[in-house]
Length: 178
Image 1 (tube, rainbow, N blue to C red):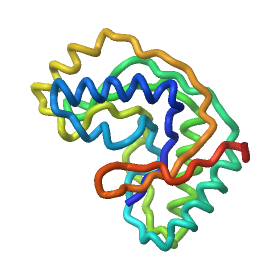
Image 2: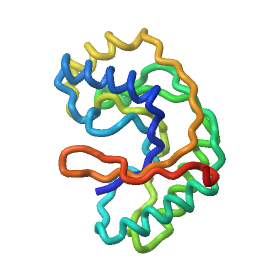
Image 3: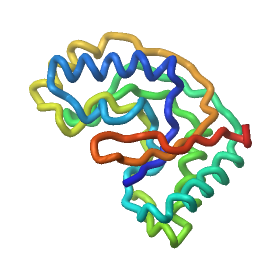
């Protein structure tokens, strides 16, 4: 199982992992701890391991056509009481990256991927699926007024593979061939 994402730089991953750890300690939320802080471009999909080299090649091709661009967090938000996340300011460049990723990977019949029908709502997940509605309210009350505002230069795209327990970054390509 794989997915494609922009993995946040370590200076942002570290504080986000602290929040995920706090949510785990307080409410038992473990799903968010299975991945580094990231913005999903292509959600998890099954692919035969022998196709991974082709996937990596296409990842490199995608990254080569993208110029680095700024991204900005803007605090916390949620999808109902099921997913708690770090929100992002709107970014035309990120939207364009998503379109290009969709076109490239769903356009390659070797992968057998279909474009998502859900609208793209970029975010950095903190807790999902394993947070109880009552715990969600408590978590929201803890974090809703806290500020997590940061800016960084998005300059990579990564391939992550599930190892049976968690997600490992197995390939990262710099934008514009950097």
